[in-house]
Amino acid sequence: MSDVLTATTPVVLLAQGGGHGHELTVGVSVGPTFLRVALLVAVPAVAAFAVLRGFLAEPGRRSLAAVVATAGVAATLELLLSGGLNLSERWAPVLFALLAVPLYLVLSRDERFAPTVDRARRMAPWVFWPAAALAAQQFAQAWLTGAGPARAATMLHTGVVLALVAMAWFVVSRPRRAATTVSVRLGAGALAMVLIAGVGQAMVLRPAAPVPGVIVAAEYDTDDDPIEVLVVPNRPGNNLVRVSGTGALVGTSGAELTPAWPRPGANGAWTVVTLPEGPSEVLVSYGGRTISVAVDTGTATPAPTGFAGPDGAECASALLGRAIARTRPAPDPGSCPDEALTPADADSLRAIVATLAEQGHRWFIVAADASPRGQAADAVVRDAAARLGLEVRLAGVSAGTGPLVVVSGWTAASLTLRANPDADVRPAPWLATEPSLVPGLATLPGGASVDRYRETLREQYPGVSPSVSGYQAWLAESAAGPAENLAGPAR
Image 1: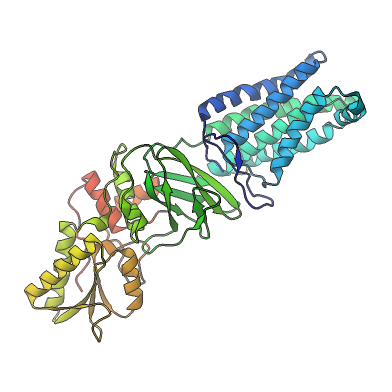
Image 2: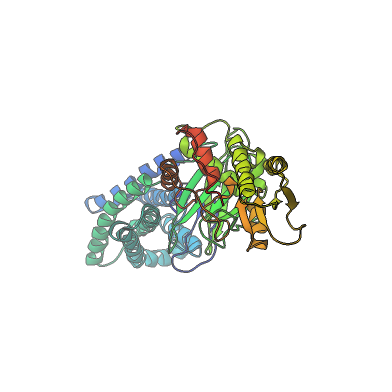
């Protein structure tokens, strides 16, 4: 993964599954800046030893131990800061063992094991070359295959760790043949140069740390397509997590992951997580691996309670609309659309009832929900019908079929529409979504400002679908001009 995570103690291995291409992920939460500085000091020190080894006298035991320890520390820092490696979790104990054994070979003074230690140091090139080759392969794939930033960062981090393992074994190597010694020193010198370039670029490619109280949107690398993760609104309390792939498990603890499911009116899979104040993490288990998403809710206004309700996806769409219209974070994320009926939507509902009367209908069915907006909309529709002499029937109560005016939220509307596939549906304005709630239901209308909203949403939150609720929130926040008629043509 290309995400940069903050450091916690102890280190927790979060990767799941195995096999080629599965990523080793390490979650962390202490000063990442300090760790990066330490890494950028340790790696050049190890690389300098490799480059200058042929020009130096035989180092003493303490000097060798210091270089090996520095390589081990640098590799550990890289594991903490990388967020994930292009390796199976099965490699975790192997990597740590390959970093610990060279230190033992240098520090061992037990005469009983002296022959074994000497033999291991003579065989060290047999560990150095495979590790160096694997590191070179990761660097080459990152630089030469046209991988995107997420994939390239994962490969670079992996290459750095493998190169440091190779360096640790180079330091303790003591081959008998002069030709082997020369070849290993040349290989280590070349790898040292690549290592410096790799760790520098890996640090540059890291994404910014989460901003307290600001929506978190991140992309994570997989074997196939990248996975997009969205945490809305990144405030204390109930938050919605959107994952672009299906079959993901999401939570704040590895023992309490819950499935993310598709929601009506929105693409991707969604689930509710409860976040505390301040820094924490959201875990996303997908495709045999677990991704750790760093979040920081700060101490700002809590998330709206509507995120835990059936219309949480609509609330998220509205908050995303406000977010892309703002030039700076706001202290209050705003309310959910189902908390109140706007005057413009009330006018649209009256227009729907007036159209039914003009078309000669004597009655129609209304489907509302228990939300404040749904109850207000139901009252507006009934008042308009009474003024025009139309009878209003409840959905599922009256016999026969007739015009169906749907004024509930996305989830309830989807259930109503699926239960009445042949109904003459007259949807409330906020039910226009992309993708459509049901086949045949109109999506967003056209218009210059709608197109601008779509484009801005696509740029800042790739893969997230637009909606009228999001558009109206964007329009109100950006003051782009008067709202267009979103009720659609009269039928």
